[in-house]
Image 1 (spheres, rainbow, N blue to C red):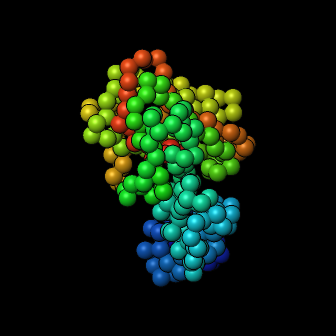
Image 2 (cartoon, rainbow, N blue to C red; image 1 turned 60 degrees about the horizontal axis):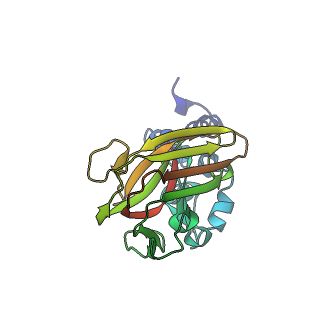
Image 3 (cartoon, one colour; image 1 turned 90 degrees about the vertical axis):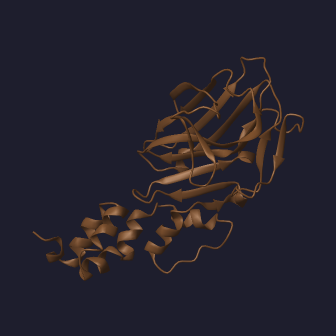
Length: 251
């Protein structure tokens, strides 16, 4: 049976149970399907339930004429909380992506300019990034609440960085990574090998590099998430890592 032979409210109900990608595809099939697939009823179902709170935290006004337009705007990172975080929606699934800037991370000795330097880079969406000057003890972490993420979703966590031309000592020993969500833990290691190929270090479309820290799963319960990376076993000096922040996104 052709879907567009059904009553409009039935079509709308069916499409609201699919995905943003499916709705966009359906809109191409007929004029009737286009009207239904572009309706506020459909796109309201794809927006997160707390979308009004999200846009209220934006650093700049968010104007929109339809729920579809709002959804499309939110697929690009939205600066929130005074420009210290971004939130966006995955174009295909509508799941939340979330990023904390370097100032929102706990970085050991980041308050001492002998070890870390805070600066503005035009390539960054945030006001400041942090460049590692020189330390032997590298440790940074982020904390967030699953309330800011989508429920029942498999997430990846990534450290977003650049490597300065002077970078040194970062890949002599692997860095330890840890993700804790409630009582569950993910542990592993990663090599900060900026000069070597690695399937866990990739270039992003925004010009930054991302280092895969690990993965975790959210359920329907509110929990705290802690994400950390450290290399504290070596006594050698290391420097030249430029940190923009930590991003989590659905996989």
